[in-house]
Length: 565
Ligand code: M6R
Image 1 (cartoon, helix red, strand yellow):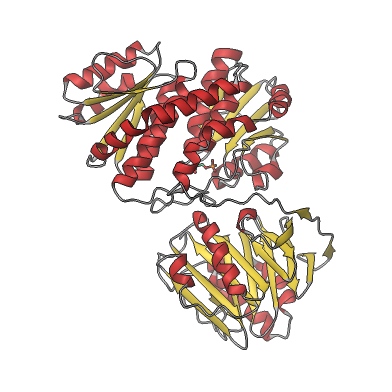
Image 2 (cartoon, rainbow, N blue to C red):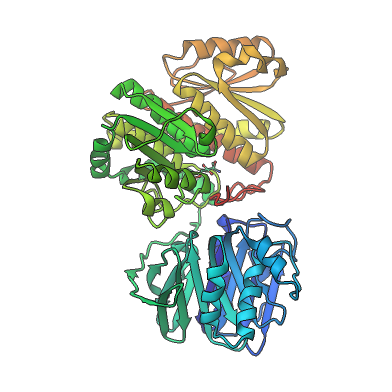
């Protein structure tokens, strides 16, 4: 996944740099900017957006920018966007994957390519059309028809005060304000000056000229623009938080109030279906695993759950009697979207649990329950995971007093904070950690391990506690951190933890009641032990990353949404 943006405004490059900072969560391997005056000027960097903004000529009315999560071609300046055609007449930035780039490239023998990316082909295709006398808009339309795959791209032409934006299966939004027009991959990256926005549909092209925005299909047939007033709630890091991740962890006692009970009530009707299959990846999958167990326990409903990238190889049947519950914070995870499209083709209904209401998954769904927890910028899922678990509990019929839950989550944070900061310094020196639990707690353990590894780069394994003695126990040595999660019914997990302690492990127990053998106890709420445990795990992972001087908002090699298969 990458972030793209572009502006037609006075000091456009400055708007692009500010927007790229907000888009950086989408990929931060490298970044670049192109401006158009009498010639196309390009600057690229591997050192972050602040570096890109340094000594940048801020004058100029047309600029496009890109922040990259590398897919085709390693992280290097030559593979960094923007790309130009051979004659440097046009520059483009692209988000998505062009699947037929190699066959197109073979046909363009007289072109000199400068990168290993799939994206560069777009610049050459447009350049060729400009060479034949087409306008930038015509050239983009003709080029788009030749492309296969997912793409949102922006193109500018030397000496022209215009930007063309093309959308197909990757998000692109056009925005307009007073003396400013522009594009963004994400609504939150628009500056305050943008007053209204329109989301492009697949196979649409937006033309932005001075005081003029027009929308077309790929045949250049004019389309009506559906403007929406720009929401004014924009995400900024407050004074008191050093990172988005900790800000988002602290927001949890508040955001739970945003759960929409009407949506839950309406969605319950879909649960009457014969077959329910939950589909998700990463943390959303862990929430789904917990949800499947809650539904089985409380609704006596058999629910299948599959990792979206594995479903093709699993014995799960999908047909017109199936409701797919697609769980995705971003609503852009390619693995999930692929299966959802396939399932729709077989007549299945799609119920999504989703944070981003502007996402592709939203468009594909028959009904959506929204997390409503505000944009999550930290790459590690925190508040979105908690909201997903909460929604599954409510869907399963659990009655939850949100005021009490909020109070309990605040108590968890305040009560354990200084202890967690202390343990994190110890944890930061470790190479490996083990998280164990049973039943739905196994998935709380898996989530704890995922959080620790992705934020702090410490190898962490999450497993069902009973599995420990079938192999992993061989790895336990003196002072190995073993984090056991459970509630007052978790006697067998505590037994398994004790077995590890006997072999030297240091036990961190995350539970409502302490066991005598716990070396460290992180107390959880007795009423909401699972959600309270998740918050403890998040804090542990966050402060361990901080102790290791790692930026937890931007773990290396990752991106906030994974839009590649
Ligand atoms: O946007 P999604 O919920 O579909 O994302 C799924 C995973 O990519 C995501 O949860 C990922 O595992 C996070 N980095 C976990 O913190």
